[in-house]
Structure formats: structure tokens, C-alpha cells
Image 1 (cartoon, rainbow, N blue to C red):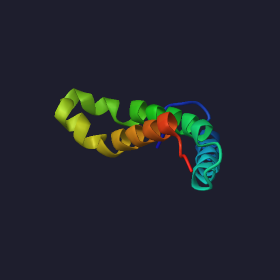
Image 2 (image 1 turned 90 degrees about the vertical axis):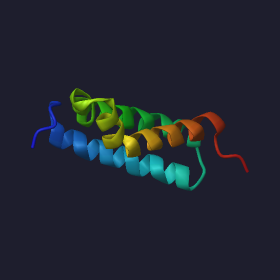
Image 3 (image 1 turned 45 degrees about the horizontal axis):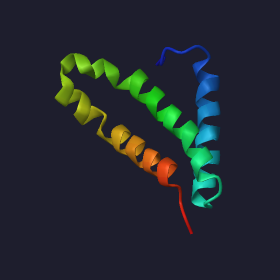
Length: 86
């Protein structure tokens, strides 16, 4: 299965490593604001690559298919804007 972007096999590994590293930074509460930026970019790209095609079926179908992605984007935005304070 091809996602469309060039070098998709290499891209998958790079994205996985970025997600793990950023997740660890968020988990240990270090650099949360900086760690959320790549995750937001990854989530927007994932939405564009996988869910936008369901807009042809209507907005409700798109919203249903992308509900988890949208929730994760909102939560990442909240983490980025507020940060984690001690």
C-alpha cells in the first residue's frame, strides 16, 4: 500500500522516531511546548493524507472518520498553548 509521498518506507521510520522522542519529552515534562510542534505537524499531514478524501462523502462522514485525529490535534494545541506547569 502506497501513501503517496516519496520514500514512504524511510518516512515511516523517521516519523515513528520523532513521535517516540516527542512523546518521551512530554511524558517527562521537558520541552513540552517544543515537543508538541512536530506532533501537530504530523497530525495535520496524517489528516490531509488519509481523511480528506472522505470529504467527498460529506462533512459528517469526514468528521466521523477524523474524530480521533481532531481530538488529538485539540489536545496537542492545549498542551502547546498552556504547557505543563508545576
